[in-house]
Image 1: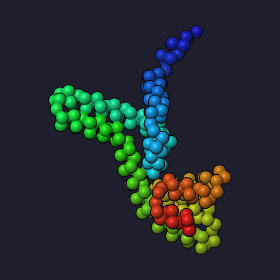
Image 2: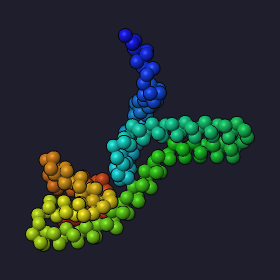
Image 3: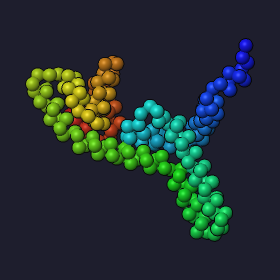
Image 4: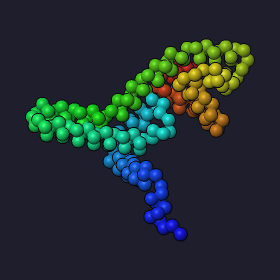
Length: 191
């Protein structure tokens, strides 16, 4: 009969070591991060269209790990040449590493918004044609979601899924406005 130690040793190293360390980092990061920073990170995550694999906890853990690596490298640089300019370079490097996930999310969010803005006029034309041809709004949205590709089609599909789950169409569209933050979509939903 195998004992608990033998069972644990048969598990992969990532399960035995990395997962508990990751869990601890995410709990610690969540606990020490101010609520306003968490809210901003969640908004950037939504604008970037991040999937469920990149949760807030994972982003916070990545920030802590990168910040720690940046601080360690900054100390090494400063230790090799202790001077004020090297201290400044090290501090910039450490802060840059800590905020790298924020910068990447911001860039990805701007790219996604731009893609949605470029695709929206075509989708709006398609919705207009479908409704004028006699389809209902939900059917027109479904057709636009099926025939499109990219982030706007994904957002339309999510709106339809939300409606199928019982959310009102207006609430689902308003949630899409929050997730995309595109002015043209906001005007469309208000109209």
